[in-house]
Amino acid sequence: MQSTTAITDLKFVGVDGKVRLISGDVRGDLDKIPFTPSTGPTLRLLNWREVPTVD
Image (cartoon, rainbow, N blue to C red; front, side, top):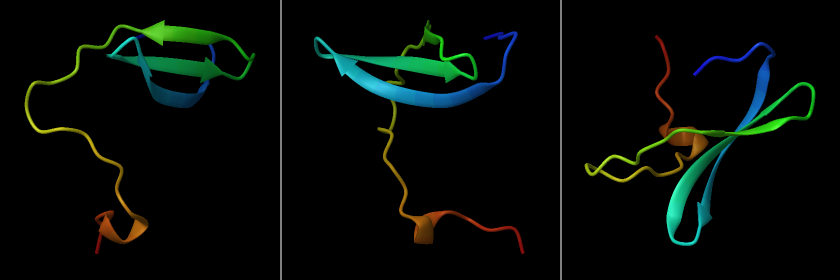
């Protein structure tokens, strides 16, 4: 994916039973990003305690 402006927001949304990835940039423009969900393990939101740190 290419953008001429800085992307400030990425969001996975469900529309009609399909997962879509939407990006927002500094100008307020929204774009649908081509995205094919993996058939492997599902994505899940990590708790801040689960985020790995660099020691």
